[in-house]
Image 1 (cartoon, rainbow over the protein chains, first blue to last red):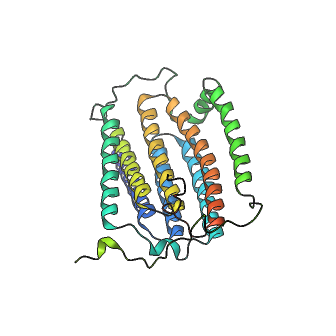
Image 2 (image 1 turned 90 degrees about the vertical axis):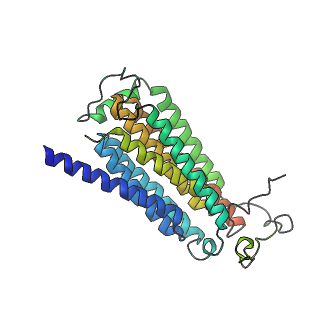
Image 3 (image 1 turned 30 degrees about the vertical axis):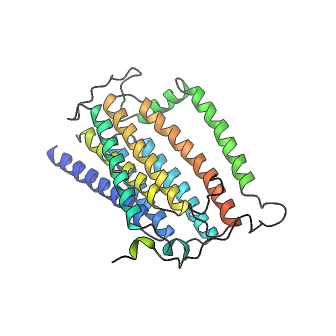
Length: 204
Length: 100
């Protein structure tokens, strides 16, 4: 029993580490293909954390839909546009912007942590209202999820189908080749050259 | 049994990294990936509370977030493809035509 707890703790710790390292990879790596593959690592780590909390169906959906479909879509667009070559490498933010962005991100993290832990009474004991829809049984999460989805949340579920239809129509409309003349470059000036000097780095 | 606070902390860290990435990166595709990261962090928080509060509602919300994220990615990537087709190599700072 004690060994099982150690194994669970180690598994969850490693999964959380993989998720956070993957997140750093998404933000930090320069090549968009590497970003997408780091995103896969994060998604798998989060899926393992779902399993550790008894949400088996959501873990499966996470792997199939996110890692299997959404990331493949990302990679497909990266290859289609050919942005994996040079573009995003040359231009980077100045160090001041990096610092500001990092500080704002850390602030967001602290805020989210405080907001979440305020509901747990800071020691893991959740102080909120307990279940009114029935006790969650981790051996049977799919049945419970399906039952809730088709009874209490059935209206939201139906609206979801409308949303997906709209998304499909929107994607088809957006990805058609534009008719008419190519774009006027006087109205849309060309992108500034990458060799522009970096103002923040000059003084030394 | 692992404390739910651990999962909430991991979720908060992932959300912070995603938010920072959204602010500092300029490639629209990478910005989109950072949004996915933030959505995942929120999903993790929902699952942690659903598990601890013994309420399946949190998992239902995660299911809906997954659906909305899929729709969002489809439309967003369509927009990015449309922009890149007109102006190859555009990044977030170049798309300033609507700035007054």
